Image 1 (cartoon, one colour):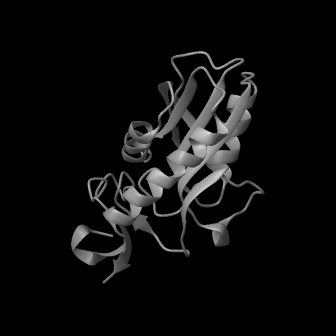
Image 2 (cartoon, one colour):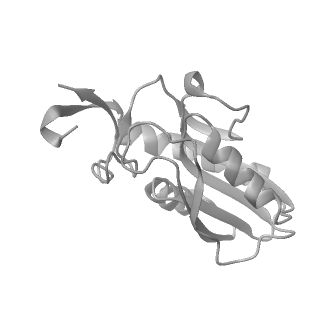
Amino acid sequence: MTQASYRIDEMISARAIAARIESLAREIERHFADTDKLVVIGLLRGSFVFIADLVRKLDLPVEVDFLEVSSYGNAMHSSREVRILKDLRGEIAGRDVLVVEDIVDTGHTLQHVMGFLHQRGPERLETIALLDKPSRREVDIRATWTGFEIPDAFVVGYGIDYAQKNRNLPHIGKVIAL
């Protein structure tokens, strides 16, 4: 699909996203109130805007790290084959960890990442996803916290792309084929 063959309709406004991140940050602070340092792991590339906004709202000592995973390539549908393209730089054994995901669709990526990280022995391992599409779930997994539940639609913006385009939109938009 070329850029000229689709339009993007706003689904979730930048204002709604900001308000939801504020409330999620308060929930996360309560959950991790006893931690001396929270390791916040962003799943690249789609979570980079979300993780930046989220960690700035957290009133906790945090360390940020990233995993780069791929299950889409440039397609609109998951390949269900999850690959780790970039590993963590730091250790998470015995530490409190929050995994930040842009969207949980089929669940394969989050399930793979959680298994991968669990093997490293974190003290607590929790997850947050900006978006959740439960109607598309193929595996039994849910994020600890979710920003917004959305219908089965292809979305872009706020870090989420289609063929590396539209990540810079300040809102979440639904891709509509023309």
